[in-house]
Structures are given as C-alpha cells and as structure tokens.
Length: 70
Image 1 (cartoon, rainbow, N blue to C red):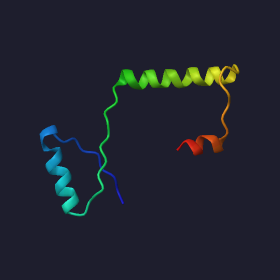
Image 2: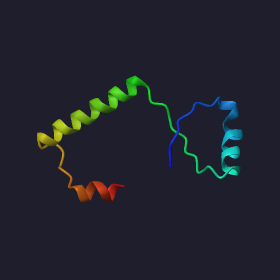
Image 3: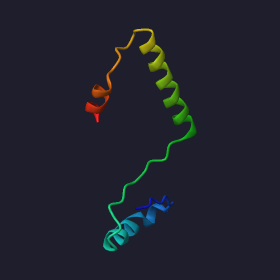
Image 4: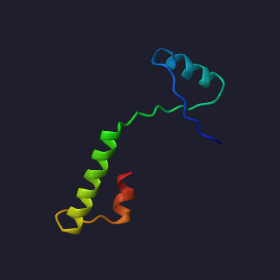
C-alpha cells in the first residue's frame, strides 16, 4: 500500500472524503499542518527534557514505560 499527501481546499474536504470512502480507498486521516515556529519550539522543549533527565531533574523512563504510554 502507498500513502499520498495531497492538499484539498477546505470547501471540498467533505466531498473528497465521501468519494474516497465510496471507492473503498479509506480510511482517510487528516493531518494537521505544523508551523516552522511550532516545530522549533517542540524540538527545543524536547532538548530541555533531555537535559533535565541527564541532570536528574526528571526521572528516566524505561522502554516499557514509553510503550505503555502508547
């Protein structure tokens, strides 16, 4: 199976989703756009968390703990 990313005008989304479902090409998922500023802030926050973990300010998590959160 392949995944495609296309841009659809807001007013056509409902029609497009219905069409794809009728053609048996679903399920469709909607992706949110992420701004460059938001991406940079998320990376910065992650790096702060890494630093805090290394400094002992945040408890380390095991792989099992991370997978259990999913």
